[in-house]
Length: 565
Image 1 (cartoon, helix red, strand yellow):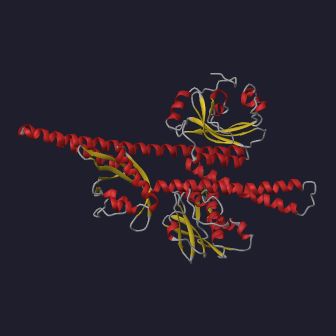
Image 2 (cartoon, rainbow, N blue to C red):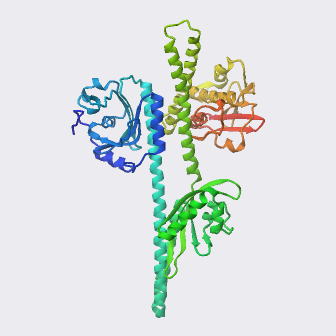
Image 3 (cartoon, rainbow, N blue to C red):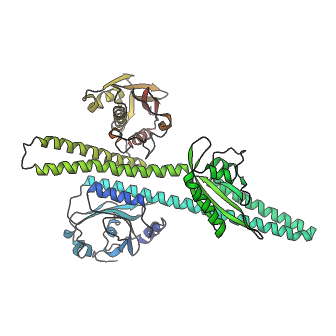
């Protein structure tokens, strides 16, 4: 198939590629904050006016996120440069589109829009299909380095992670709906069985046979229900709408922090819901009863122990022939972990946007000032402006490196260059930026002869991160202890400070992806993924990582590297 590019833009596997795209159920869907955040972040990182997240369908290219292109939602595939970007696995770059022979007839390049620069990284599925792009567009020519291409490719992997997570959420909802439909079908079977049983009572001999058949159907239905509930970790309930009494499974009660023996009725359920969600839940139940439809809701609850959790609930009304609806049967599921992960991910994107924007803004201001002073090279402000610009670049480079490292670990692309080295020698050479500052004394003790078989650069990276955190979060601890010892078939390396310590409720989350303690102030800047990266490096070496800390006494971060087998 040829188009305005004057070349074939349809890959040989296009039918399979389109099938892979459509399984994500994303075409034609409204904008979503997560994708808009990523596209907006790209405009800030690369300082371009336009960034798009596009999905290349059979005839059209659909924009899932559009920053800088007005209200456009789709464009014909035949004129979109994204159709070229999905032809190959690497980043497609046109630094000056007007000089590209394949684009001389493209209306976006030659027409009033005036496209000059384009860079597109393909969105690649887990099974290798390129379904769309994360692209940058400018109406002026510009250079785009290999480092820029690596960063854009890394951001494209974040977009693909979001697409996969979105599909997982849709799949979970569909499974829940299937469970609800199965539950409704089972209830209908039970009702039919009861009617059949009462009818056959006229003939005792015949009724005994039919009764046995009805009981078997009920048993099969209940068995299927149990399997469905167990597979989905769903707790079921049966609510009497007239009295508010509820019959619940043990898992349903556990979802609300209750013991299996505890009494749990509709009033108890409503009282456990946080006040801001109660009217919403009550209205959803009332609407389902009134209009004979399925009730669904997600809301936050308070357990008896004071902890907060999230519940996903659904239900279906069962109507009595004479009195109308008098029962609701349904299921509940604890979704606290999913909600917390979604919140951490959203917080991380917000933090990343803010933290990347700060050094970019500072760098831009310094460069503008330097531009004004370029004809006066002796101005005393110039050295300070150059130093401030270098600091901004260092911060920006470190944060981008953390982002790339995080996705290397997630995709399993980290390669370790293992050698045998003496740990104490490595510790004496690392963290010179702290030693030269003169504010802190780094003391190395323990087994000075202990060796490790591992990637010295990556292990050094873990130690530097631990020491940087000690300086950052325990500035009053003038001594920082680096300790080496042999324990149970491994070499253990520890970094100890004598600062304020870490609360116990935060320690279990320190090495989680996207998690960051709720702190404010300049000393808590950064993306908050350094310890996650450290944990992945240690895991790749087959070791363990942890922290021992008491509030007011300081913290000891440690990790182990096993002896080679």
